[in-house]
Length: 385
Ligand SMILES: *Cc1c(COP(=O)(O)O)cnc(C)c1O
Image (cartoon, protein in one colour):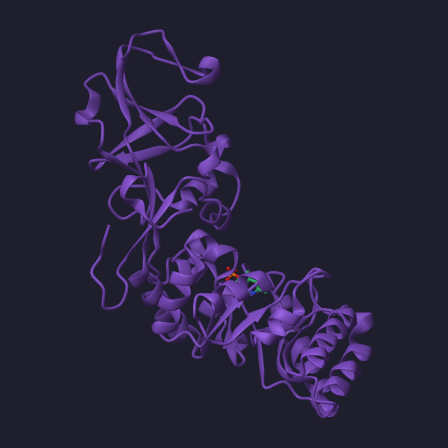
């Protein structure tokens, strides 16, 4: 994606003021410091810009999945604490050690690789241990925990590593009152106690993702690790929006307005046929840009304050809306809001998720292709673009 929007047909406007506001909401609800999770290019919002805005608003640290993501933030001049927690054996551990990235390790093999990188560079690696407390995905497996704890203590004793944190990830974060959440916290506390007994206590412990950060302050420990709430989407829509502000608004420029007569079909396979003479408009955004094809004919967009239905297939590059017999006063060049805050009659990323049987995480992080990003609301700057 590009950040020079002037000639782009499709624009994701990112409100950095909303990001800053949401950091404040999360700090208040959790009563502790925030690791802003900016993996996957900040859920499609742009990792560097979001990281700067979140840190500027008081986020203490950053979290990403891959080392490549952490190194990209460093290259952009961001010197905050960054934890990276998902590694393939080919990952650039040496680069991460050299850049001072906190490497969360999930196995003795990963720890060995980090220790080797630290030894060969002569730099002490900063390490977090990712403990599997039930998710059975990443994290140190239960049967490897004892040997892992001993290996961590040994690596620390020989000063190959600094033991920064113990972390885990919740299985049922989106069911915040499920008893498994507290059990996972207990298991993490026990792991941290094991490390302390071996003389290698972690400096901090963290497990809470967005829903826990909002409604389970008792799970907060030293830091919380929210992602989706940072972007203003409620992880618990049944409980409200928690005062979060959605940061992304996706808009497309109407590229063509034309008449279609009764009985004519629109878009591939003519899955929609005009029930009467009408006016349609083409929006140059398709599944290659993150508009799910499965949403064909099942969503509405907002143009000049009015909603119009999408009709026919969503194609790779474009889809069509029905403006009605009078054309709805819509002209080529007008902007269609595809999703946004949902506060002026438009729809949200959550509505798209509901329409396609997924979650808004997937909708936001799928925005891509030819979409330009435009940033507004940054501290001290005028909205631009
Ligand atoms: C993605 C991720 C998060 C953030 O989760 P949200 O549900 O978006 O708040 C936190 N921790 C880990 C380990 C993650 O992978």
